[in-house]
Length: 541
Image (cartoon, rainbow, N blue to C red; front, side, top):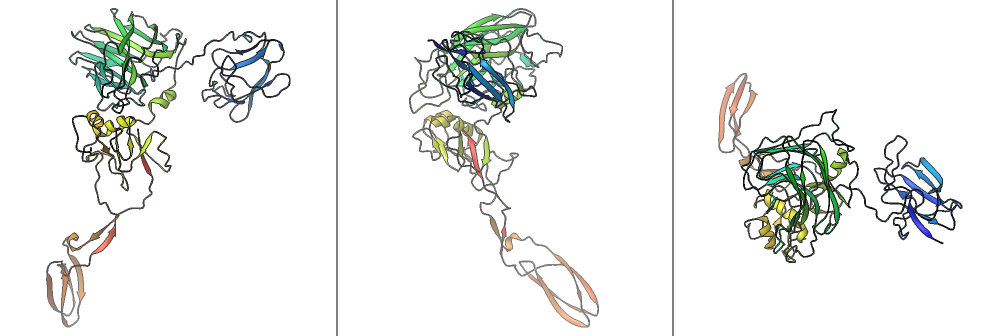
């Protein structure tokens, strides 16, 4: 007897709903084809890890991984019966004796599968949506081009500048010489254009134009891949990009950039941490340039002295423009995937891109009723402090708060976010020195949009009421009329400092105006707090 496990489809299952759209949340029920008893399918070709029954499909209508179907060569007619329902319980499809053609080998047309690799592009927003406006140049040495991956990368407002340019989240352009006359624009493809053969043509592309400047060491478009250099260490990957030139052919170089963090004694950047994976000679036609490579091993390097690390190590990809030479380079849709192959076509909808690059960023705040912030990547803004391990911070202490520490340090003055024992030269220096930084005061405070004030500034009375005294009441006058009939009388009003009186003899009415007031009024309390609802205010790590 030989029991095997085969894939009926390669590489993935996709289920459309009744309207033709992806059946997100679809359910696959599997049974024995003879007995109709529930019968599981598996995640691995060895049949050791079973999928739940029913198997729930992802929101894009695809299975969460490969599906292996058990087959027994001694029972060629004993296969599977299946039913697929959408998220509302409507039957979409059913089938019996599946996979067809049970031979005990690679039946069902699936063949023998030895490896499953999900096709995920690790360069988020390779269509550059929400990009900056066209830049006539000269470009600065660090400019953010478009949003992209950002979780855990060094903050972008005042970025750390490494040996090969600024580090941080998002797609950016970095260079070492500011004097080059260069520009970056985002031309649209014409509606009739489809130059990316067998691939999906996006709306626009990047065009980079530069003159020749001697002494350039790097001039790169940089893409953040993942926080932590260890994650993809020694991993087989494939990078590809569509590119061309306007006229004369030029070379572009593709690099991986491994940054080991800003901590004490972390492995510094060098030619060993910025590794060239390929060189491409561009022509005047749109061409796909793929390269398979293995990410450099990190085993011999260091994130820094334990207790003095900053948790901002990361992996980047850089597309280096021609150095010391004029160029007019066009490119679009850079792709980085696991394994030695790339998909024939690749496309992400704008909503799919937004689901990553528009997620909350370090320093973002939110209001909520839940107090479950300790495990959600958010901290409670309780007027407490954060800092490195051993700093004595009251809210959170550890290397994981470095990015938030630097965000507060760089954006808010010491008066509003004080650093223990005073601020030093940089946020990194203070963090590694064990200094704490306090959150801006927010408990019991109203929030206001920034404009003309100071970020983090607290103003107004700290109490919910104020006592008004005579000194709080400005001098003022009143107009009145008095009707007297054949009498003489006196009158007086108070202005807080003197007493003025007069006598009137009249047989008729007389109007009195601008009469000063004298006797001081009694002090009284006035409430200043409007109707208020209190919530937790959280800040993103």
